[in-house]
Each structure stands twice: as structure tokens, then as C-alpha cells.
Image (cartoon, rainbow, N blue to C red; front, top):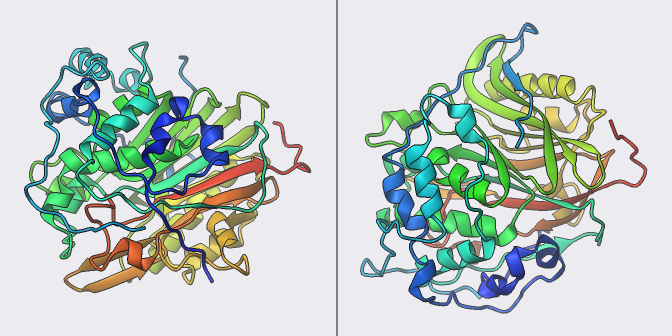
Length: 457
């Protein structure tokens, strides 16, 4: 039987100074606390991004072909530098999205309007010396914008083993739902159109990231990278990498924000970048529309190396063999990048594959010795969650397990994992909704190094 979760989203996290990662992990909150209204000075910082996205265009990246014959790879050296009511009315108050006077975001607006983004993308992607943001202030602002919504159920961590060592790190995996697809193509028949508006939905996405404050964040279906996620997260201390799909379906939607793709973020006070590879996945030597990012990071405190990868495989029934080929190509690339599993590996992604599919079995049996982190929440330790996505479309209701965090079980251990909301907490209209910004649920796991592992390459 799989563990559920209860309670509400706890806004008491506002009072944790700078959202201390250790405090959040060691002191889970169980009391349902409503979001509180705050005075105007903080209000409006995210609002400036409504106009900023008109100033910053997207820049797609199509990697060069490698000599190995696998997926295309571009490698680069690091740069310096409980449940409440879920029904809503159309009359609820939403924060203005045109206010650019925020003390938090004025620096961001200056950067977005002054940087030669289109001609110098790589320079833009790296963090600058502009004003840093306080996660606590930003979380408060998100909660102001969401104060008229019912509080989300609190998802509780299931702790397997306590490890308070400095080597503990948190990983979040999440398909956040591309804005253009949510509004223009996915046709969630039970989700009100108002719940899909970016002006509100981005607050829910950022709130979830800020609540759990991962050390490494892996996202899919990111189509607001340049105007939202990179500017915000870089000022929260993350180093950011993005790779767009070569032919994103977002571009078929009128008034889109550019192509969607995968993004990988890591906190620079925990890790430093050693190398980065951007991979265009292949299927039987044919280049495909799916991509992956793989980065080797060095832990600042221990000097140990870790490889983190993020990907999003081909969707839809009937493409099982195609996904298997893509997954096999990714494994070949990762075997080379990790020097035959000498460097511990974590792979996050929306695989669009149930555990019964061959691509899942290929990952579970690969020479990289991978295990799926969320299996540890089951009673037998061998079963995946009953769902990581749950949606209703005109063709029917779909409840599937498609998202995973794979890890090197010889070198790493799972200390805890974030439980999933119950069917009742998700609600009869499923995902997305006013409470949940995506049709996928985020996965969050805390890891530490096995004591017997001495891999310090």
C-alpha cells in the first residue's frame, strides 16, 4: 500500500529565515495554516514579468552532432561566476501583473531590458551581480497572490532514515506543464480556463519550488524560462541551464512564449559546475524532438562528484519502442559521461512510460545500477506510486505513473521522499486545477552518500 498525505500547505514556512533547507527538512509542519495577506511593499514583484516577457525573446539551441553516432551532445566547460474547498468564483481578486515598482524585481527588470539577450544568450544564462532575492520574501509574495485560493493540502515527507550530515541534498523533479500547451492544446475539459492563466499559475509553481527549496531542480515543459525561471531562480542562488526541443509543439499555439524544453537548476552554495552536456536524443540513429541535459557537479563541502540529468521522452500510446530507443540512447550517453558509473548519477524526468514499459525496465536493469527513488514509499519497497499524473481529456480520464527520480543505488541512499496527495485531495476534476498548476505532481527526494562509497573522482 502506498503512503498518502494529509493536512494543508503551511504558510508558517514564511517564518523560517531564508527558508533554511535543513530546518525545512527536520521540522515538517502539520498544522493547516491559511495564507495571510501582506502589506503592499512586497506585492507586485512577480508582476513585473507580465511586461518583461515582451522584451525578452527565446533562443533555441540545436546541439552539434557527436562523433559517437548517438544522440547529439553539446558539452561546455563551467562559466565562472484537511483539504479546503476547491471551487472558485470568477470574481476573486488577482494581483496586478503590470506593477514594475517592486523592490525585489526592479533589478530583474533592468537586467531584462538592458542585456543583449538575443545576441549573447550564453552570457545571459549565467548569474549576474544584480540584486539577490530573499526566498522568504518571494514566498510571501506568492502567498499574497494566492490568498483568495483555498490552501493546498500539505504533502508530508516520509522519512526512511535520518541523516543530518552536510552531505544530504534535495532533488525535485517536475513537469510543470508548458503554458502554451495548457491553454492551447492539452484540452483539460474539467479545468477552468481561468486556472490556466499564467498570471496566476506561475505563483503556484514558484510557491511549490520555494516551499521545498531543492538543491537541484529538474523541470520539463518549460516555456517561460527566459522571462520567469532563469531571472528569478538565478537571483535565488541557482545556476541555470535550458535546452529547448528542436520542434516544440508550443510554437503551433498563437501568442506562444517560444519553445518548451528541459531545464536544470542547482544551488551554487552547495555545488559547482564541472561540465555540462546538452543531448538531442536519437532513436535508431535518427535525431528526435526530445532532449536531455546532463551536468557533473562537485559538492562544495565534500568535493564529491555527482552527475544530474533531466529528460522528457516522447509521449502517447503507440510510441513505446520509440521511447525505448530514446531511453537506451540516453543511457549510452550517461554511461560515457559518468565514466561507466564511477560518478554517482541521478536522472529525473517525465518518461511518459508506465513501469510496465520496456524503457522503464531498461533503466532498472542498466549497467549504471539505477533504482527508482519513489519505490521506497511502498510497503514492499518495489512498487511505484499509483500515479504521478491524473487528468481528464475529451477521450477520457488518465491516471498514470510517468515521472521518476532514478539514482545510483551503489553510491546513494534515499533518506526521505515527499508523499503524494490522495485522490480526495486532488479532487474530482483532477489536474491541473486552481490548487495544482500542472497535470503532473512534483517529486521531491532527499539523498545522502552511502558510507561505503568512496568515489571521489
